[in-house]
Length: 199
Image 1: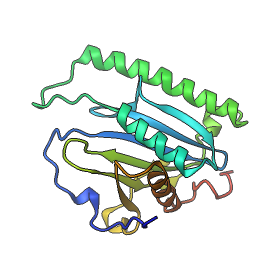
Image 2 (image 1 turned 45 degrees about the vertical axis):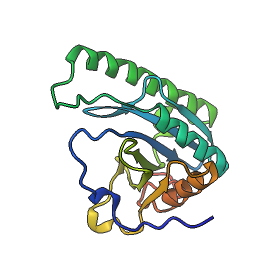
Image 3 (image 1 turned 90 degrees about the vertical axis):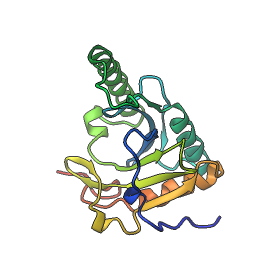
């Protein structure tokens, strides 16, 4: 497989307000890997209907790539094109349903992989944020994150070198999965999945 090269920083691309996108996250601990579609309103939420799957940490690249593609396909974009305010009642209902599914999903992960509770499953994992500007760009972008005691955060633009990747949405499942694994390998910080648990 031809190795993806970071090249120009995808975050530096100027995209007009309201440019439609789909997104998902890939989280990996020392026990599991989880792939979850986002629902995009004024921010990204755990999708109420999109893909949310998990597998043991050593899942095959082909499975990872196929799941990422499906998560992006089932992600949804709800930002009004004219920039008008979101419907308050609809957003409140969405947030309640999103939270309920989010917690149920992580309860399932905790039970499946032997964690005491979902908070323990959240304690330490690497995460890659994936975006696809599906109407304007052929590639998906993968952003490695910094793992900390408080969760996962993005890197400063001055720290992004080698931590941002692009791969065509139409690439093979294996190619997408291998790019995800490369991005996960670039996650760094005291909360990295291969580091000892926090005291």
